[in-house]
Length: 115
Length: 112
Image (cartoon, rainbow over all chains, first blue to last red):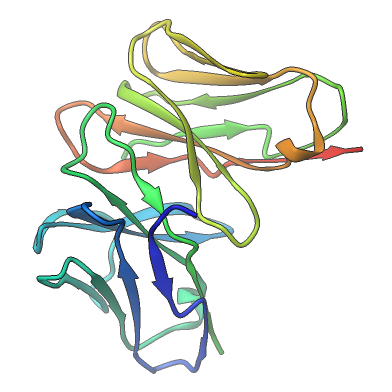
């Protein structure tokens, strides 16, 4: 158990819909990272928040957005869903801003299926 | 765009055999990490290598970072069924970027 929790574990929805994925980081961790894992693309970095502020952006679509709240939990919002958005979405957390030796702890993921 | 190529993509071996998986790039990384991911779970960090030529051992696992910091290898001695999983390498780019670039992974199956 990494200490990072994600809900829900599974999510099935239809194209065009909007969903929200939730992540609670490990106690004391200020950074939250979101990743998307698909069979063809592998694990792709989406976005990072540090202490409530956006810190780094990766391959995140405009239809996706995220935020980190004052209690440090984070939500990833996916809208106008397409079939290709079906994937595993992981949240990770770390103590501070990434640097050498900084360890990211991954949650168990949310499996999203868009029908 | 920095890319990490992992090979082989799939590996199925018998218990007790040795194996090596590779992680290659044309880019230089300031550090490289290896993760293992089991079905239904998130990746778990195994090791971070930072210095070119560095070798780290974790029980039966030996990790090496290339001299030029562009490639890495993971060698497993006397593989066991518990080693089964997806092995991912991830590179941290130079210049202070906070993005980790992941390879697509090597799916290892160790048969009893």
